[in-house]
Image (cartoon, rainbow, N blue to C red; front, top):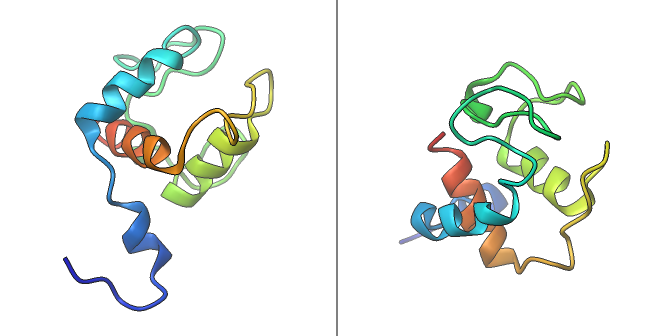
Amino acid sequence: MVFAAGSATSLMAAGDAAKGKAQFEKCSACHNADSTERKMGPGLKGLFQKEKLSDGKKPTEANIRTKIDEGGNGMPPYKDMMKPAEKDDLIAYLKTL
């Protein structure tokens, strides 16, 4: 696979959705994967098809990664709890919802 030099977006898209589904187990206590219905946090079905996130930002890989890293609104930050590859996998899975 060849990536354009300096293309962070191409590098972020390298996750494994099957592994990401396993990573989502950490998230499923607070988030639904199969609906938009709220648990403690918002349901994530169709996350990447939404017009905007709860913070008003577009649902891009970079913005989702920032939300995972920084948390907010009751969600803990996962920056130091998940490896970058695990976040790649989780984001790949979230794209399938």
